[in-house]
Picture 1 (cartoon, rainbow, N blue to C red):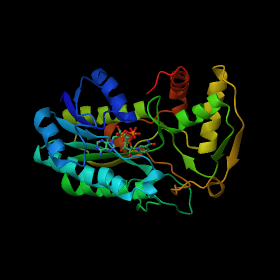
Picture 2 (cartoon, rainbow, N blue to C red):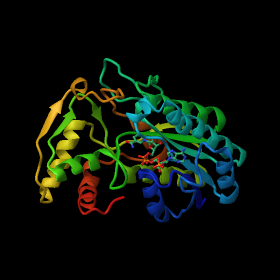
Picture 3 (cartoon, rainbow, N blue to C red):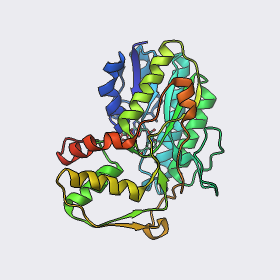
Picture 4 (cartoon, rainbow, N blue to C red):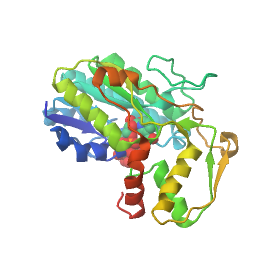
Length: 296
Ligand SMILES: NC(=O)c1ccc[n+]([C@@H]2O[C@H](COP(=O)([O-])OP(=O)(O)OC[C@H]3O[C@@H](n4cnc5c(N)ncnc54)[C@H](OP(=O)(O)O)[C@@H]3O)[C@@H](O)[C@H]2O)c1
């Protein structure tokens, strides 16, 4: 296999996929958002018909978690119906599909242990529910699929938590960040690498279809992550703003998020030989790139 058809190439993970594919021996093809809206069955079909790819990758998504609470239709269109449209085209064109989903399909439970792929989902937000709808559609439509659930994606590109924290730091704004939600921040480049390893494995005859978790180590609260980002910023000569831990209730985000959102990544290690990496390893270069303005 040497050709992948990518939907969502202008997103955080998509940009990393485009820049890393060559290292894995892949050529990437795929429409920009304007020509390849996944809610447009005709546009998706045209991309498949043109592509001559060996597998399809869907990293296109509506990812504005709080805005989704009031834009329910848009979130479900992209994340639910869009996923179904891509899956149906992949099935028609006999292409395996790698689809990316989220830890936000899970809810809350009393015990604090990492989520397994088979744990029951119970999304707390519209975004989580729309991504869950996409997963269901992919499973029902294209049996030859790999769904990778990931978490807290960050990079030097687009909108993400690291960029928001650094923007506040550069403007000298004090920060309130929740300390009662645990996450596993994951560099977009690591997600892209995981997708490319799976794609390479499929090309070599791998057929461990199904749902997999992949996130970085170590689990941390959003406040702890903000503290690490500011530590890096300070280390690179920036001035640290005041950082205050707050509860989710005080913070008052529109969308509810799981309190303990840690993914067990054992299955992807066993089946696809993909090991977790520490998010701290990627942080210095990403902070430096954002501070220098080398982002979009
Ligand atoms: N970001 C996170 O923290 C996070 C966490 C867990 C899982 N994930 C999942 O990881 C995947 C990649 O996320 P990301 O962080 O790379 O997201 P991102 O940076 O928001 O990129 C998503 C891309 O999809 C595009 N898009 C939105 N609606 C579309 C549509 N209807 N048709 C075609 N393209 C559309 C967006 O275009 P516009 O810019 O024009 O909207 C954007 O280019 C997604 O499946 C997401 O759900 C993300």
